[in-house]
Image 1 (cartoon, rainbow, N blue to C red):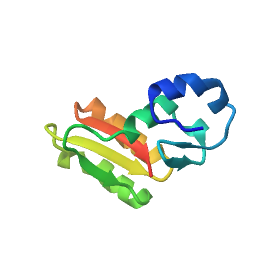
Image 2: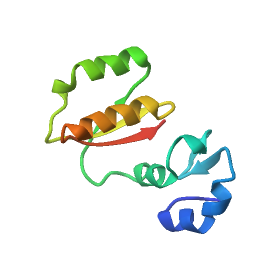
Image 3: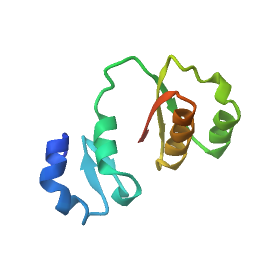
Image 4: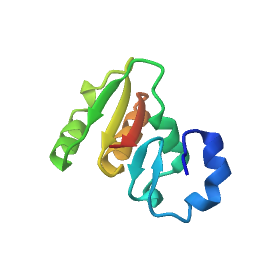
Length: 107
């Protein structure tokens, strides 16, 4: 099963929700229950605008970003990734609350 578009997702939705893992847009996802699939499919597409990519490697780096939110610019678009989606989605939510355009993904 190959999921590359929202249409593919809709077609296989019931099957996907029964799986623990799958390959979405060419990327192996080990825990499908941890993130909304629609969001993952959207984020795996290339962003059409220039963006700043940030990969959060560990909790120390995560807290460093959280403590220095003033370093994020409102005129930039950010794509934030981490290994499980928890840190990246949390930071992205906070940035959005501060009117900064942000997307997150799992890498």
